[in-house]
Image 1 (cartoon, protein in one colour):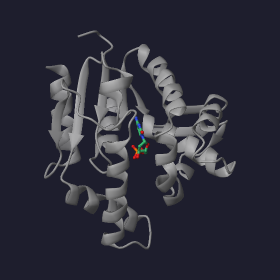
Image 2: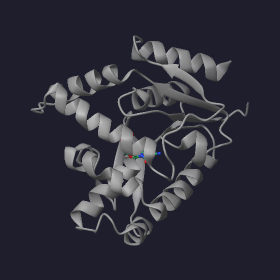
Image 3: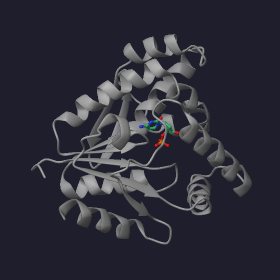
Length: 221
Ligand code: DC
């Protein structure tokens, strides 16, 4: 393996992959790239500018004229949209519910994949998303698919939302997660898939630290 390897991490919503990717990058001193945050940031811009979410060409042009930056600042990842810090603004239910329109637009994905490949090129990177091992970085040095049982993912998400003060029921969360899974899996371009050479890590019943240690062990092996 190269001294500055590229690590690809994919998985469904609520699998714990973002937390794992962030901690693995931290422990290795690598750059952490959250590609979901990039799709979220563009969704926020599309909502703010009242773009037609079904006009794929226009969304592609919007992507090309938008500046999205991920910066590690004092140990956490900050997301900038045209220079504005939108780190928390991209986590609202409105963005989460509309990101599927942005993520399914072919011109948007073509643009995002090109940007993400540039970011990954230097090595010393942990990139996380849905299509990283399959499309963005098929030559990554290590590939992981982080998974967990549906009910476990729903419970994690419910706990997270409750702790954030959201007025949601467990049933709402299950319904939203099912919609997200369906759009991630059934998108014709860049769908969520296990790459043939990805190592599958099931986080059901494991602590985050346990998963991080397991992934680090596999990277160093
Ligand atoms: O990882 P996340 O839940 O923040 O991602 C938000 C959405 O972005 C996800 O539902 C689908 C989309 N996405 C994508 O299409 N491709 C990626 N590589 C990452 C995320």
